[in-house]
Amino acid sequence: MELVVAAILTIVADQASKMFVLTRFAEGQFSSSTFLIRIRRVTNPKGSIVFVHKRAVLLGLWGLAVLSTILAIRFGHFFATPAAQLGLGLALGGATSNLWDMLQRHGVIDFIDMRLWPVFNLADVAIFIGSAVALWFAF
Image: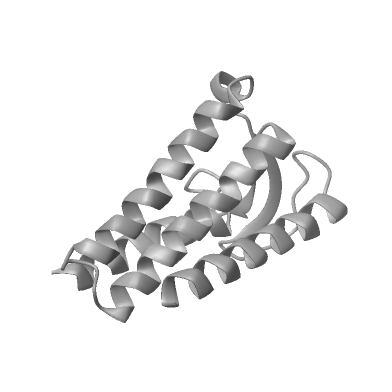
């Protein structure tokens, strides 16, 4: 149950944040901020260019990831804890949200600009943190 709730909340939060950025910033436009983090709208077509005409491939890979996750939880002992399943849900929700962008917008919407790192989004954060949490609590 933790996996499903975490995945849904991640998708909703990421897509809502992207809609906020899409409605308030033009491509490349950024917020004026003196802090380390600023908002800068960037559409990242990398990765999606190759697959944009092969939606079946993307959906198949996503389906394989979902099936693998379900099998790992159902038959494996590694991801049995609620914390590990929460982490898997975060990672799966982030991947699903970025896949949605690739299929609908032909590129992933990124907007968190730390100036010293490539621009990223909440889905990327969820994938990173979720994977780390799942692996940490898997063993």
